[in-house]
Length: 184
Image (cartoon, rainbow, N blue to C red; front, side, top):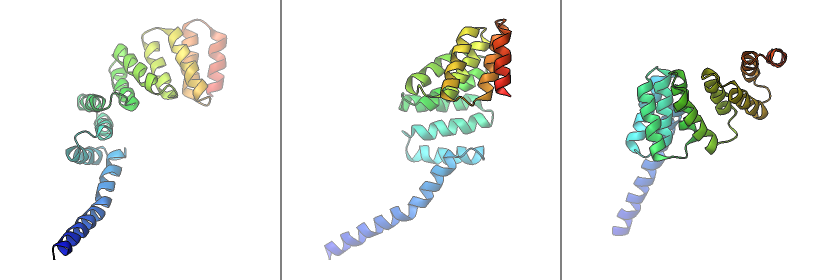
């Protein structure tokens, strides 16, 4: 009788796990999506309640908060994600984007540096770090970063255009025109 109860208990537990799997998968999918920020925030919050050490859910909820314009909460979530996983290039990059948007270029560059140290093949991180250097008036570093972004993504029209703008600021009109032409 005791073996039968254990078998029934095990079967009931397995059935509950299998039944809950689609719900958990839906919460993860909803947390990872970017179309509905409110849904993303709710579902990521559910996942964080279930597992407070879920760095990915903090990052994704940070993205949803940023999409809603709540950058303070977004930064707090990126900070939580990085505390849980200091090797999370995406959270460094995402937090850097917010600092960049806020005009805090030094902090943005520091976060892009961390992201690039962890993921040196991120063309978008080079591109955005180039934009931050450009905003600071450091056109040589901006051009170097646009070069690296273009090396990784040779079809990036925005990188050609922005590199052209940096060349123009330096008075190198021939290179600027060549980049503008490539951007078109």
